[in-house]
Length: 412
Image 1 (cartoon, rainbow, N blue to C red):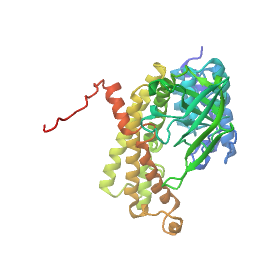
Image 2: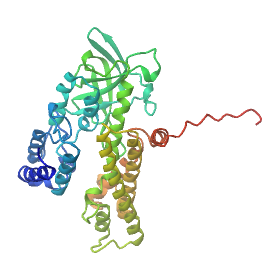
Image 3: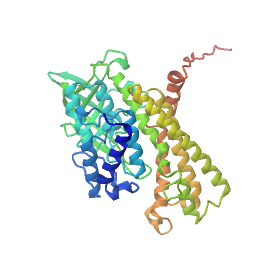
Image 4: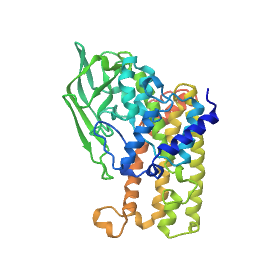
């Protein structure tokens, strides 16, 4: 059996030989790899890097080899992450299949469902989206009304979802539907998978104030889905839904780590580097107040990174995340919003640009920061609002009791 140091040596050698030089540079927004049937690669090395990493199972290093994963243990996975970070390697694949669906499919899916879907997730062959929120069911997700009625060996779906990230680009969807219309709202929900090309599925992008349209409205009109695509037990989809939300919140908490890769450097990717660039400083940031604010942010970001790493390691030992994912999500999102507030503070009046006519006075990077600052405000809503996360933390992490409803009497 290979020792951990032997594994490190072989991993380092493999990465040196197989990671292209352009994949050891900071990720460019238009080169992020999402995979899918219609995947496009602006940089040919991105495709090569994905194929090589997927071939090793290292897009999902701890998933079982049986389904195409890397089969690494905790220690080996840590070594792999360290070696990837050492050479500044880009993430080979960005995927909701990896961050959300895959883990719950491994936990609740049948062998046939795993064999069908997991290898395609590992290789980036199918791009997934999430069908949770509805026009009338946001924070109260369990009140969802999208119906799935059994008709022979198919379910017939009717309803609508909203804030469906990248639904217009996705190949398949994992979706919550109501299958029991008499049961209490949490008890009549099921979790089902289906192809977005199925007849009756349509999407419409939602234009945001930032100018982008990453979210969609998604409509289901008499969509026929094979009954075998139901994951877990009929009417017990809420159990899977909650589990997946823990994985999603852990993923979203990563927004708070967006500055980590360059937190100890002064390059243009870091908050401090951008601030110095905006103010024309070379040796150090000249504004002492802003410098102090950024120093506090960097300390908190570093502490959050260590806490996140510890939590992920504990999750692997406990076979998945737990309620602390709400703590990480809440703090990570607040940290990300704080980052953009600092960037606006650093840019000063150069953060006021907006429309294309302003381009002569504002650089593309300056315009981008302003729009991303607006986008960061949504961090407090997606994946469950900040208020919901605080409730989960109070109940599931701190063990606090439910507070009784306060009532008042007339005249008193």
